[in-house]
Image (cartoon, rainbow, N blue to C red; front, side):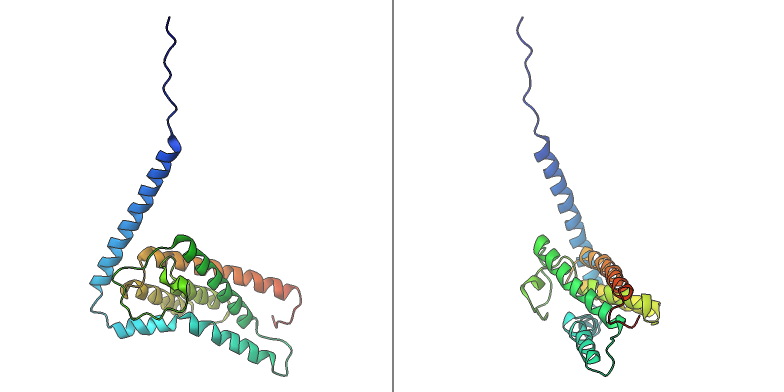
Length: 207
């Protein structure tokens, strides 16, 4: 009796990887289509207004200003500094690290219709995912909403408007700004953890 023939083992991993790649590609394609339609739909919105929101969320403003205020506070007669400034600076430093690393990992190109009026500071700014403006805006909004006494609604409205402007300007896709917003909220939570630790350790902060 002839031995039963055995079929060669099926390579499932390459098929699974291909299916996963196709799924991610489909999501990215859908994201690109939705983002382009939103960009086209809101073209009547004054570009000057969108550019103002872009400047308001720029890291070249948000990082130097809190650091300068923090350094100035250390030169005064008091030996203690504001925990609000320390936490904000810590969050902004985390934001630079996380966003820069994510951009280098994913390397998603910016939309092809992005106008050439964007100020690019470093090489990673050429990549799209995630949105640094969105992460920074939601970091600032979530952190200040937790302990500054500023109106939460106004802070989150500014963060949402800044994030939306990235899509309407053609700088980013929708998923870029959504991921950036979640990252910013996470960074605010980490900043508050750092601040709580420094306050509990009886450091130089006035808590």
